Image 1 (tube, helix red, strand yellow):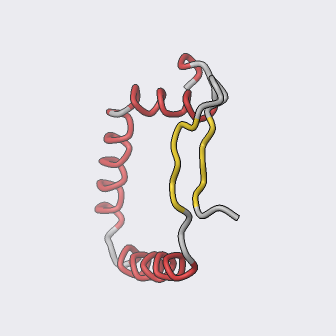
Image 2 (cartoon, rainbow, N blue to C red):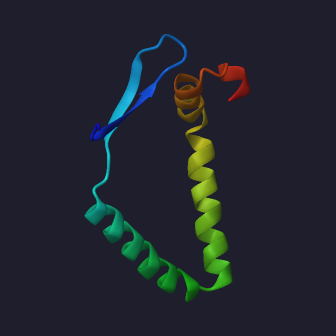
Image 3 (cartoon, rainbow, N blue to C red):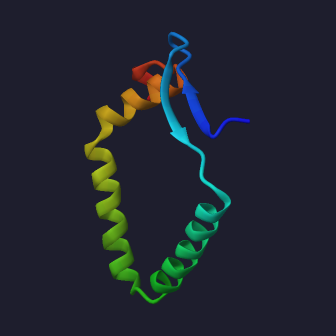
Length: 82
């Protein structure tokens, strides 16, 4: 069993990215952090949530070309479709 996960690009069969797998302890910590964040998020006013989410979408859109390139490398999809 490997302690890493690899994304093999279908474009040329090369390893596009390799990441270590999380340990059981790291997963448990991430789940606990997510629960705590959700509790906090539930107390955030709706208009503030909307503002933060719009900012997140704007940041994502601003990185559109880089994200399209990454999707292309990971999935082999033509850039025009990403």
